[in-house]
Image (cartoon, rainbow, N blue to C red; front, side, top):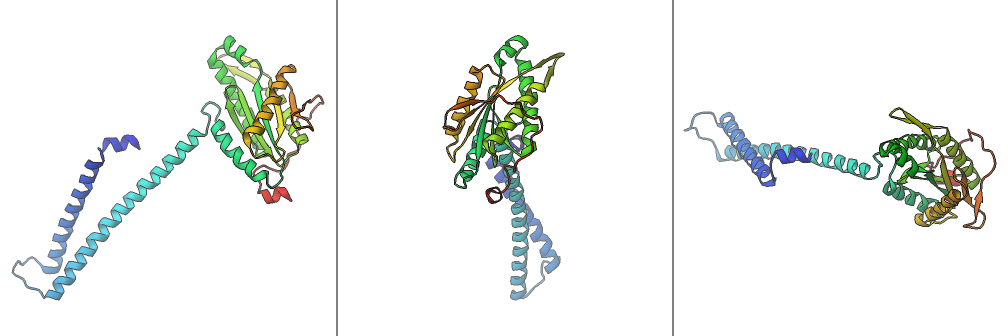
Length: 286
């Protein structure tokens, strides 16, 4: 759109073109209407009432034609501007490498979700996930291969999110984030372990090279907290605890708010779905 506007010149040039077009249309329509109503005889006489009626008719017709055309053009331009604005917002909230939400998009959506879930006392649980030894992968195989790891792991997260309509995002670097509403901490732990196993089972292939990666996951319930930063900080603390405990595991905050608890039990690969996050809050509350 910007290039088209530049091709057609600045505002003054476009305004002059519109004014010139309006004058031209007015002259042409006026001449045609004069011939139709008064004929081609320059000495013909008409009554004052007839002349007034014809003048008003021509003026009304010209005004309607010009106003309609300009209004249609303005509406088309406004529609294109709104579409461009929506596209810019989508781009601003999307990570170009994985196609998932970026941190800005996640923070906006998750904050709105927590603001609704907290007062309704609906369970909300945050996840922070980090690719293990990602720097070593970049150093050994190169940043292009590292980008392929992120992109293909993004597909795993997209599949994981689509199953239960979970909010997921690439939170930055090699970190991914998720927010689940409508599920207990125990249910989220099952899904987090399911996600960990999905990531471990994914074979990352690029440029003739293939590797398998592991991820560490930290989990924190919101406890009706509506401040997203506090909830994500707790999940991040759990994530770092998972790193300290050897990586490739799931760690959650325990009964006391910030107590960390390592998950050791075996988890089935196909947990039953829970109430979708995007269901109306009233339905999830009942």
